[in-house]
Length: 81
Image 1 (tube, rainbow, N blue to C red):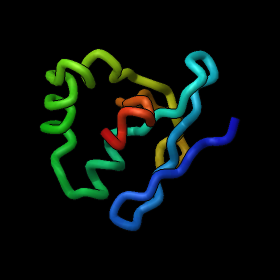
Image 2: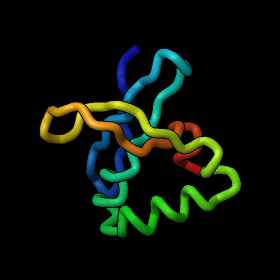
Image 3: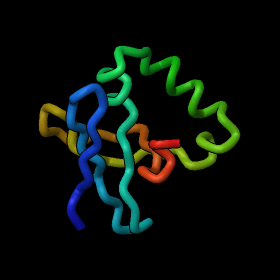
């Protein structure tokens, strides 16, 4: 299945598809960069949230430098909140 694209502050962010769970995920770090907010602070907020903390996960995906990384992600269905 093809990756989805979300737009945040006119920046296109690719959302990887995980065939194991049959859903798309949003990588948190590029969202934080697009919004100019602290990734570390947002990570803590997500992990401490009663709903988001239970669905956040590390997923291996390709970074902007085309290397593979474990990245903190949320399911796309939770992104628009």
